[in-house]
Length: 165
Picture 1 (tube, rainbow, N blue to C red):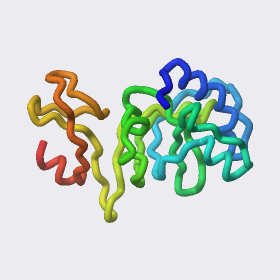
Picture 2: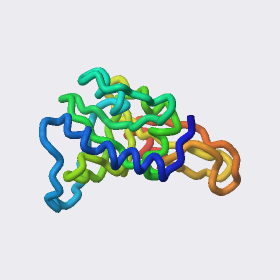
Picture 3: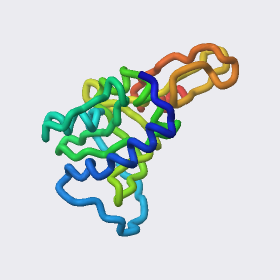
């Protein structure tokens, strides 16, 4: 099922109280957002709550609310921004162990994606989409913003990627 951005954003904001699975109630303290690097896997928050607390998940009709579940079990929901589009639109990104550089909004436990990387065979890889025609990198799947040809998913070891540039 497709869900529009307004409905999705409403669902995300309405469910942020559920993000308090980390053991504390959300407080609007006015703490400033800060950059964090999180390592973990992408999970659907409602499905995670279904497993933990027997909440009735209805993702087929309402859509998924994705979060990164860190190695120590903390959940941080993704803000539905363009930089997070790969999480919502490409299953390959959700299947990997990720390193997510993000801006954490501590009052809500939500993150805004800055960079997505994956861990593969003990090495860090950059994840991006590439247009061969225009020689352009982008952070989301779909047609190239320039020529409208399809972009290709790339996963390149950080060291090799830096050599190419």
